[in-house]
Amino acid sequence: MKAVVYKGKNKVAVEEVPDPKIEGPTDALIKVTTAAICGSDLHMYEDRSSASPGCVFGHENQGVVEEVGEGVTSIKKGDRVVLPFNIACGFCFNCTRGWTSACLTMNKKVAGAAYGYADMGPYRGGQAEYLRVPYADFNALKLPGKPGDEFEDDFVLLADIFPTAWHAAELANVKSGDPVAIFGAGPVGLLAAYSSLIKGAAEVYVVDKVPERLKKAQEIGAIPIDFTKGDPVKQIKEHRQSEKNLQQSFRPGEAEKLSGVMCAVDAVGFQAHAAEGGKEDPMQTVKWASQILNPTGSLMMIGVYFPADPGGQDEAQKKGLYEFPLGELWSKGISMAQGQAPVKKYNVYLRDLILAGKAKPSFIVSQRLPLAKAPEAYENFDKRGSGTGQDWTKVLLKPELDRSSKAA
Ligand code: NAD
Ligand code: ZN
Image (cartoon, rainbow, N blue to C red; front, side, top):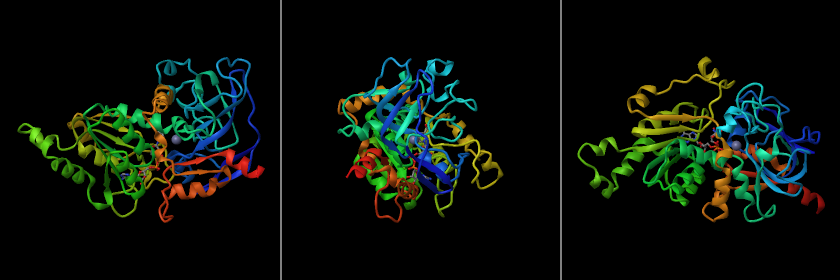
């Protein structure tokens, strides 16, 4: 079969690889209809992870069951499914508590396993024609309808970023009436803003510098903040100070101390750009978040930080050690959370929000391309569209388009 293979820094190729097979009675084989490229793939693409050349990428996968092992009882050939990026057993200590992101049995190296990802076990990715799914009864989420229907591009976002973004809003303690700041307007940041709005946040600020992405934030009802136009902390405070009714409702002493937000999400991670100068500052968004959070607020760092970064700017950063504004966070009593999202905890409910017409996460999708176009998709998505004059926010790869162009 054809698959997207990592070839080394800034290079992927679409190559023939051996077909996946059923390896155990609880496996299923999926014919992939849509596989998305994730911001997480870019860390590997840019050689900022331990991924080795030869790795088949792709952890956001959806398709149709082609074959099942003899022990699979709840899905059958022809069923439409989406797979959480986490591969989980369902029976270990962490899985039974809902933390499928830290499954203890599927990866010898660390807690947690995933398709096509550095350190996440021996599993190939699904940016390919077919995918092997272990423990298919537990991992596959069954979907209604037919591939290519009106929900195809919403459902595929259930593999990772919609549940991931929901998890970020959940652990940032977003509740109705809260003011929220999201750093990063990539797919995860935009959907964290969207999730916060669905949860009833009063106002949601989204900070980034890519105009096309900020425009999307505005379109869903968030307030876009371009950090190249000035300190985002100051911009958010000024915006809140301009809200007369809010200001009039404060008691003496409250206005300054509640000038920020109660909930913040870092949807950028260790490759954050510094405020100025175009270089990286892995702690930039965490610093801004610590400044804009009100006392007793919450910070969720959903953006990735690895234990090792070959491209780190000094020896500490290469070991995943960062200068962290702990003093400010501690003295404000900020609750903090981080880590990989346990997709299965949320994907059923989010599927049903989509089916009920209450969520349409595919507003972030910018391209739908055949697998063969993966090299140019990676190149443009990696630049966040910069210089192309086009929006490259979320790219979906569709092996079906390769098949139909071959047939034509
Ligand atoms: P992305 O790379 O498309 O988006 C990141 C955005 O951050 C870009 O638009 C960029 O312009 C912006 N940015 C850079 N520096 C910034 C700064 N200082 N302030 C504000 N914005 C800044 O990626 P994505 O797909 O949205 O993913 C975002 C992060 O979430 C990545 O680190 C990804 O690996 C991670 N992620 C985590 C999980 C999880 O389970 N925890 C799952 C999926 C993705
Ligand atoms: Zn992803």
